[in-house]
Picture 1 (cartoon, rainbow, N blue to C red):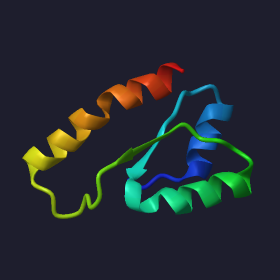
Picture 2: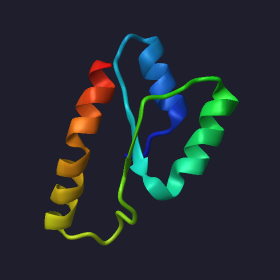
Picture 3: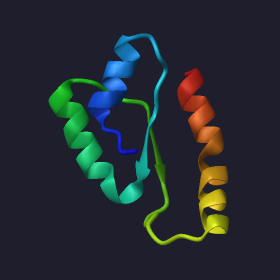
Picture 4: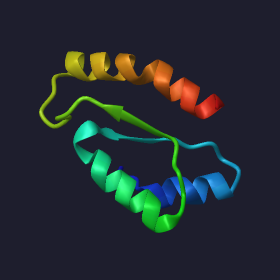
Length: 75
């Protein structure tokens, strides 16, 4: 499933806490989209690339992002 800043904005307006998670390669695009929408989405960046990672590598990426995700959702 793919998600955008617009989707995160819609969820937040409905009262559902949301965090935009993407790889660091897309930071500029996320910033541009946030500015265009006038919405400062809670965002967590992961290592890039994600494609073609092993299961073990994906677990390590998720583990590294976990605390940032919890902070973003509770902040």
